[in-house]
Amino acid sequence: MKKLYLQQGFSLVETLVAIALLLLVVTGPMKIITDANHSTSFASEQVTAFFLAQEGLELAQKGRDDLMLQYFKGNITNPWTKFKTDFNKCIGSGKQCGLTIGDTAVATIDITNCNNLASCRLYLDGTPGRSLYVYNSVGNNQTLFTRAIQMYPNGNKEVKVVSTVTWRTGSLIAGQKVELITYLENVYDTN
Image (tube, rainbow, N blue to C red; front, side, top):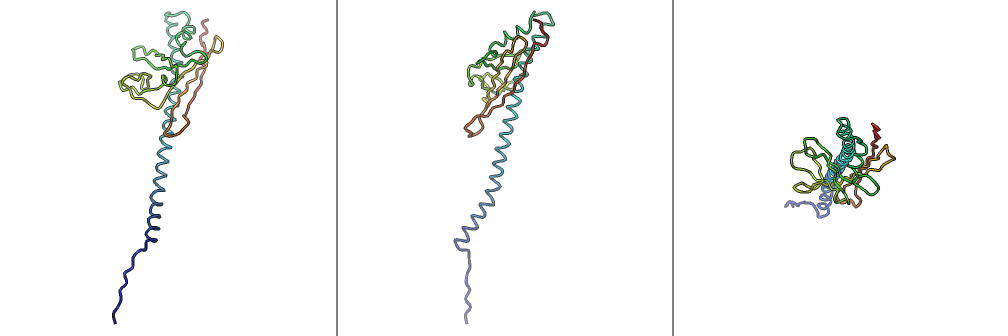
């Protein structure tokens, strides 16, 4: 009597089920890694935007404080009035400006008129200097961020400073925004 040897293999259904299980095992972790990467990128953008907004407030305060130093040296008679004159592009309803540190030895504040958000776009400065983020597009790399500084006088003794940084993340329809507020006072009351 002859023995029959039957060859057994996987049926088409078994093969498709095995492939589907393999895809689930591979795509699950890949999805988790992709989502984590997007979250990390978004968090990084939020941190950068917060620091850019904080820098805007600090530059406004530096502008005020530098004028006080000039007052102490006897170079100007009324630093508060000079502050409001110098920062006129930023002060008042509907006005907004950009602030950066100038590349001079004195490190003055450069004031850029921002009529619209496009003119408030920040660029990465590739040259060694005092400011990494600048408003000058010539020879610099465009970033995701715009920064607008607005100042609102509150009587003759105080100015409310609002620093707003906006950006768009990936394919999100709505833009993102960080807004910080501080108040600069006429601390030496020379009026």
